[in-house]
Length: 390
Image (cartoon, rainbow, N blue to C red; front, side, top):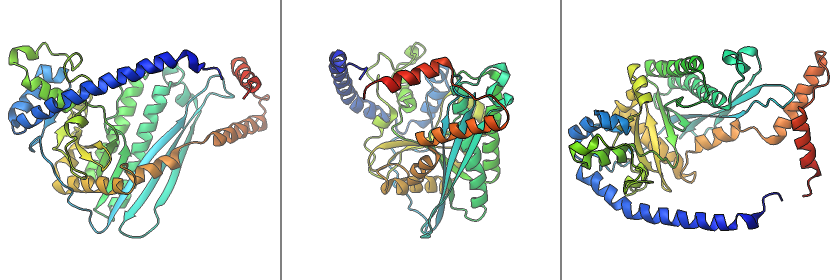
């Protein structure tokens, strides 16, 4: 054992006290935050004005729709038959100390026919990336940030293809992905050229989905966003103080998230609908894809559900998203079943990676390359770990 637990026990105990103090502070602040929610629940025009102001943009405030902020909307109920599709991905990151510089993205998909009694249809979509264009974009070695973004785009591509195919046969078809719908590229080790390419590919998927009137949503478990809370905080400040507000740090609401605002939702209920307020969302809005969201009590927690603009504009589509998410969570411990299965299909196990490395070594030898070796650093790490007593 290299981690001497006796040397961290004092730090761990202190961390426990910090966590307890933080939880206590949040418990005391949450009622005040919910009081603001009820106080300004019907003040929609003024809230939109605050969200669109310069201070509102700086704090990335959400913008309300046409529903009261204290809405408690029960699910409409699942249709007798519906098709639910999920896609999720995993990856093997490139290792410059390995046998070769490459990376792998594996996408798992599931098609679940609710109410049919049929077994779900599952697939995987592995992609080994090793060409110069893939591993040396813009002349530099690919970064883990770029691999993560490539995986997100691959997930959306797989979901788009299946939703458009299945949706042609079943109008009650929903595509579900794990995490936010907005492709986040800010402050990542991804070049401007690659960011543009990936954003265009992602927005191209949304273009196709909108053209096909397809219904898609992103499910965010235990969300940390505070866009609605920031809006309420800014609204309650006197007008002359708003320009000086920077964020929630240092305020009584520090550490709170929007999900604390909506903790009074009963199981199955959703909140009002909001529009995201980030600068990235403005870029999506240019293409008519501004991201909207609501919060829902999944039975065990409050989750955030994101939908594109054309889904938010259709009450029937929004009802399907709400009802399907709640139904899927009801028999899978508060998390959509189809996303659990997609993740299981996508994940790459350690033994699978070892087999892959052996296949790579054999392929290199077949093509006349000398017996490949790990770098000296990797060899020494392996030797040290092999010698270490268990």
